[in-house]
Structures are given as structure tokens and as C-alpha cells.
Length: 291
Figure 1: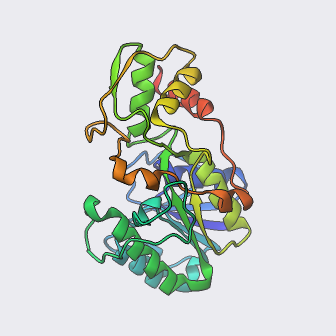
Figure 2: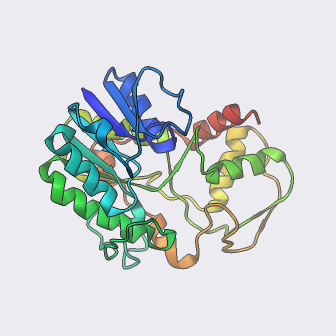
């Protein structure tokens, strides 16, 4: 298949593009060329800014397009208007942050209520979920029966420019006492490579649907995640001082949002989603960072 990935050199897009290449697909990356431009040399690289002139996408036709870096609705509209049917099957990478807080605390499916859509022209993290809802609505309007929507939780693994999960791997590896948020906070994550594998799996089959993509289904607490990190590193977990919700600590969320960290991924699992043990992700981050 000919697959166009908007982005493709950072965490999420890289995971998708790498999986597509590994499966023998013809992959084209469209991005500004600012984040590791030498990555994935087997792909065709087109330099361009989705927020500027889209002339570089005026020609060409793809069997599938994957949009990993749209954060406001107009970005989706401009891409789909430019490509139209040349986009082929269209995958929009959304987020579990689209769900309202009126969800089941023990797990929620893709049919749970969403936040009201926001239509701002620039990204505001205070409206991140609402803006992604707007993006989804534009994608549904313009892609229709060609649309696959993926809603991941926290994405982790090698090439994680956010450093949110890697922060905790480094903290455990250092072997010194450190501060943690709330030990009981639930924490689901998905390795970018597993997210990529499932996304490509769906694209190959022309799946048109919406999936929560995060793991594991039996959601661990923050304390359990740190213990798993220690096992992955092959070290004892240092002393942790649990301070409660702390916005200065990566992945810390206040208790009012904990229900959103228990997404039900059974639909994706039934469609073929699998994930590697968290210990494996930890070992790969350790190797990448030379810990």
C-alpha cells in the first residue's frame, strides 16, 4: 500500500511509519524536517508545513493517509480539502482526552460521552480534548466512510520527546530516593510501536471504526507501574515519597480525572490490538538512554 504519514519522525508517527515500512508498504512522510530528518531513510520524505503552503501535496495519490499531528480542527479541514479522495483511507490519531468526565470510573468504551467541541485556530492545552473532538468531527464530515479514529492513552517508548515516562525510568535507575505523585493513581500507557502496529493492522484491512488504544486492560496504579519499571531495569525500587497530585511531576493527574485513565480497550483487543510487557518497553528505554 501507498501510505502517507503526516509527521512520522517523532513518537507516535514514527511508530506507525516504522511498522508500515517493516510490513513492506510504500511510505511517504510529510513534515517540516525539523525532528530527526534522517529517521526512516527507507521512506520518501516531503518537506512542508501543514500550517502553511500545501503545494507539495498538490500531486500524488495514496491508498491511506495517517494524520498524527492535527490539534485544531482547521488543520484537519485543510489537509482533507487539499487531498480529497487522493488521501484514500484516512486515519485520525485522536486521544482518550476527548471523553467528558461523565464516564464510568471502572472503565468506559468508545460510546462514552465526549467533551463539547472547540473550534479555536490555535492549540490551547486547557482545551486539548475539546479541540481533538472538533478535529474528529471535521474528519467525520470530510472523510466519512473512509475514517478510522484511534484514541490512544499516554504513549511511551523509545523516541519519546515528551520525556514523561522516561522521567520515571531515569528516577528508578538512579537508585536514589525520589518523590512520586499519588501511589493509587491509575496509569494506562501504550508503547508507540504497539500503537503503530495496531494502526497499520487496521489500515491494511480498511477498517472504518473508532478504538481506544491503551493498555493494560487491568489498569495498574502508579505505584505498581514504578515497581514494574524496577523489574524491567533489574534493580530494587528506591524509596518513594508519595506527595499526592503534583502538577510538576510527569503523568500526575488529579483524582477528578482518574476515571479517564481507565479506558476500556476490549474493542481494540477484539480487532487485533496486542501490547508488549511494560518491562520490555523499560529495557528499550534503558538501552536508548544508556542508563
